[in-house]
Image 1: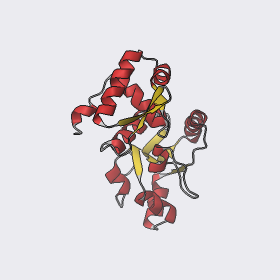
Image 2 (image 1 turned 60 degrees about the horizontal axis):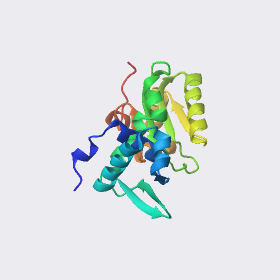
Image 3 (image 1 turned 180 degrees about the vertical axis):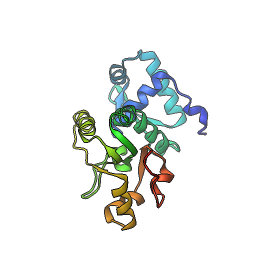
Image 4 (image 1 turned 90 degrees about the vertical axis):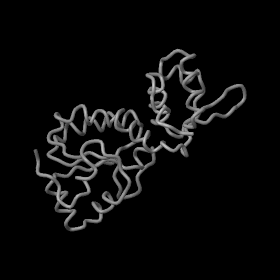
Length: 200
């Protein structure tokens, strides 16, 4: 049975989770994981056994190696995926450098971006709303693109522009509002509310 106890995690488990959720389709064997996260092999084995035990990971024998991979049917899969998105990579950088980026009121990742899928035509991976220092944001995006080895589609609006588009029911904005997302900066309730708050 899945309980909150499953989510009480060690440093090693955090590193393993980050590794698996950055490349959600990948399968890893023990020594490969040990090399990637730079932890002792016994600690890695212990955590893998626990995660298989409560259902977050599955394993599969291939030749003389046992490979581990994410179980996407795990009850808290989406919640963990969102936590990892917010606390690693571009998510953590957007929050860490928020002041350098200007007056950012909202930053969100699309669900497809978080799960590693490419956006369809006309969709964006990331939306940022506020008075944004564009060169600073572009630098963060370039670094993320180099690390992920893919182009990131992102859009930037001022609060006024986004609000105007909302009131006009702009198709792009409606797709964003009704699509799946992970809020990295700002409140979900305020984001979907008819009237955005004035700039602080």
